[in-house]
Amino acid sequence: MVSLRKRSLEGEMLPVTSIVAALAALSLVALSIAVSLRRKKVGVRLGFGEDPTLMRRIRAQGNFTEYVPLALIVLAIAEYRQAPAVLLWTIGGLLIAGRCLHFAGIMTARTPLSAPGMAGTYSALIIGAITLLSI
Image (cartoon, rainbow, N blue to C red; front, side):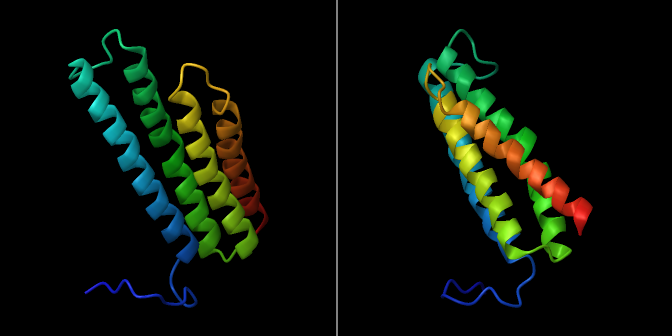
């Protein structure tokens, strides 16, 4: 049985990746619900019809699924290879913050947060790749 009591992360396998992956999973569920609710509201089962809001939500969800899996793989390998914790938390933090900013930006007609969100995502991947090449 899984215990939800507070415990130390010391000695656990890939604790940083586990936390970041859990946050990513919850984020994907939120994105998917946003798409589903909009589909129901506008009566579109496939595609996005003529609804720009639905199109933005679908692209936010798609963009998430295009970037997050590779970033999590990079993070997991870096953690497995014992990269410094500060780098692991930086990669994970940039990824989650970047995805949240991108989602917030793309959900509105004006997208001032999308660019910093993508910059966070790109930075997570670049720092992760450099980390893998240097350890």
